[in-house]
Length: 179
Image (cartoon, rainbow, N blue to C red; front, side, top):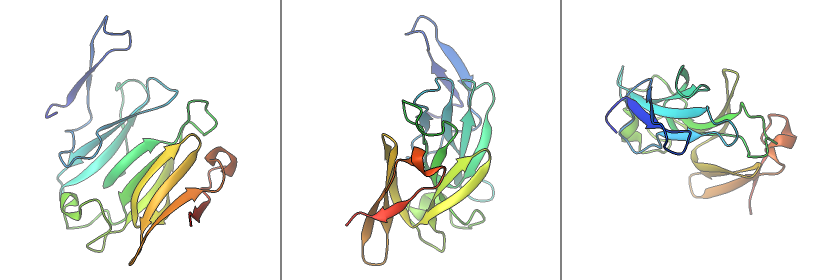
């Protein structure tokens, strides 16, 4: 995908529409698109920028690509924190993103891990507010209304899960070690 155009259908292929993306797709293997579980018009897209060094940028649209909003930079992964039954705030987005946005080390050289003085964090994004939750994140995913996160330490990788459903935590993610 070298183009800044994507094609889609929302009527089972009867018509094909085109959307102009807000930037060039990233070329470092980070998932390009993420879809919302209950809002058909909402989409996350991870593009690339090269100024001052190569890094990624996450964008959000709520109108099938009619308008895009930059929501975070230096991301490795972004997903909607929603569930199909809407028990989680549909506006919630989670990303793993590097903390140092002024790094002189290109993101593609960091290898998706905390390194070079740049910590990979789990952050939540809601209403334009970016809130860091955990450092040294390796991977995370949602299942139903719960979240699992892998965090690396000097000697171990810890798998952490939310104690409660995210919908019960009122925008606070409770994380415990999964021993």
